[in-house]
Image (cartoon, rainbow, N blue to C red; front, side, top):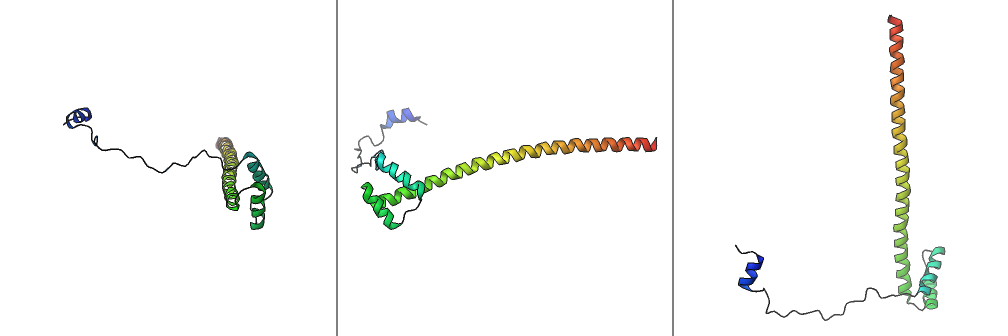
Amino acid sequence: MLDGEEYREEMGEPFSSVVQVTPTKKKKNKNKRRFSDEQIKSLELMFESETRLEPRKKLQVAKELGLQPRQVAIWFQNKRARWKSKQLERDYTILQANYDHLASKYESLKREKQALLAQVLYYYYLILIYLFA
């Protein structure tokens, strides 16, 4: 059986005579900024006071910022999704801290219970010795 290099030497490169075709469609520029810093600041300030815009307000904001109403709507939709995700992370962190505290307290109480049971057994043993001695 031939290994990869021996195969290439004997058989030649596969598809070496085929011309590679590159796609003619231009790739979208992923780093293209769709909003200016001022537009983002304005949108952020509005989001702090209201997370959902009425259609009339959306048109007004779009006009003031020089954007399409659809851009404003999508920005608010994306912002709500990011906000919700961050809120879930914060809630999880708080719940995790509460759980850790309760788990620690539970373990502490369990140890205390064991110590008290040991004391009860010890006193019970002493009483039995006293009664039957």
